[in-house]
Each structure stands twice: as structure tokens, then as C-alpha cells.
Image (cartoon, rainbow, N blue to C red; front, side):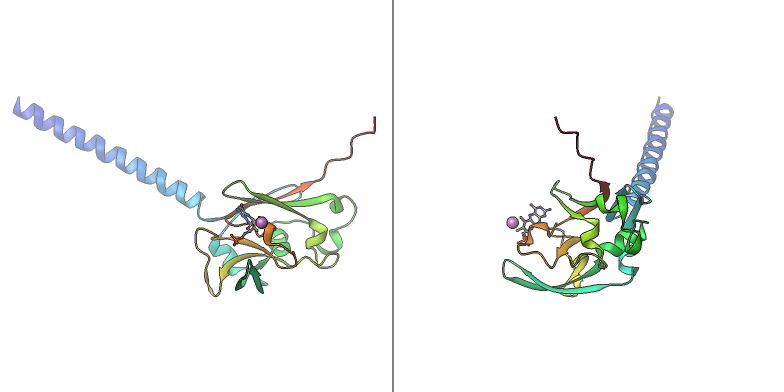
Length: 180
Ligand SMILES: Nc1nc2c(c(=O)[nH]1)N[C@H]1C(S)=C(S)[C@@H](COP(=O)(O)O)O[C@H]1N2
Ligand SMILES: [Mo]
């Protein structure tokens, strides 16, 4: 009877240890896949997850002095066009023909979305000064705003300064439906 209950304890410990190691392995695997960063997807790009470390290594970087609601700051990050280029989006001379109907949808953790025309982001055509910022005043951006925030420096109001960016997709504007 005693031996049996000892056996039961050993067995249940083994089951517990096994379950724990499974949970850890699963948890670690999931953390690695979902390391904080941004998913790039949509059309004419290679779906890519850029981690914060990937972004920190990207060149060129750009600094923007801008203020939202009187809160002046120096934002630093990577121009959005270069983030897209790194995933294979058309830029420069390739922004012609059907690529002129491409738009970029930036999605936040709270579901907030803002769009830009790809052409408006390409410095050869437009002059939107948009960066995907990962630093504010030289420090990582806090979780309320970041870790990634879009800064559209040329905009009048900061409405497209998407906080907590989680995804950026290149999409093609649908063709106009035939008139009735
Ligand atoms: N994720 C997310 N980003 C957002 C918004 C939002 O609701 N959710 N509001 C936008 C609007 S309308 C404005 S004016 C600014 C406000 O920026 P602030 O909170 O830094 O003042 O954030 C923009 N970015
Ligand atoms: Mo706003």
C-alpha cells in the first residue's frame, strides 16, 4: 500500500515534469515566432517578420524632430519605404504601371489602421516623410506607444502616427466596378 502510493507520487511527478517540459518547449517556440516586431505582408512582397533586432540593424536610419499635441520629440527609425523594400516591395523606377495602385496599410495592436499610397512614400515620386520609429528621444518607445510607432512627419495632424504597429501590408486598390 505504501509502496503503491510512493509509486503513484513518482508517476505523477513524472507526468508533471513531462507536461512542464512540453509547456516550456511550446512556450519558447511561440515566443520565438512572435518576438516583438512587425509582420510585413500583402502583394508584391515576401511575407516577413521583422523583429526589433532586425529593424535596429537596418540602414538607412532616419531621425525626425516632430511633435504630436505639443509633445516635441526626436523619433528615430527606418524610412517606411526602406522597410517595404527590404521585403521586396517595388520602389524607385519599379513604382510605375500597376504599382501606382498599390497602397500600404499599417495596422496597430488595437486594430487602428492607416493607409498611404506606395507612390507617396517613394521619394522619387512623393514627399511623405514617414518612418517606422523604434526610438523616441534616444530610448526604446514604451509599450503604450510602441515598441514601434509610425511617424508621418509631413502630416498636419498626427492621426496617421499609428502607435503599437504590428503589421504592414502592401495591397492593390481594387479596380473600379463598371458604372451601372
Ligand atoms: N494604435 C493607435 N494609434 C493611434 C491612434 C489610435 O487610436 N490607435 N490614434 C491616432 C490619433 S487620431 C492621434 S491624434 C494620435 C495621438 O497621438 P498621442 O497619443 O501621442 O497624442 O495617435 C494616432 N495613433
Ligand atoms: Mo487624432
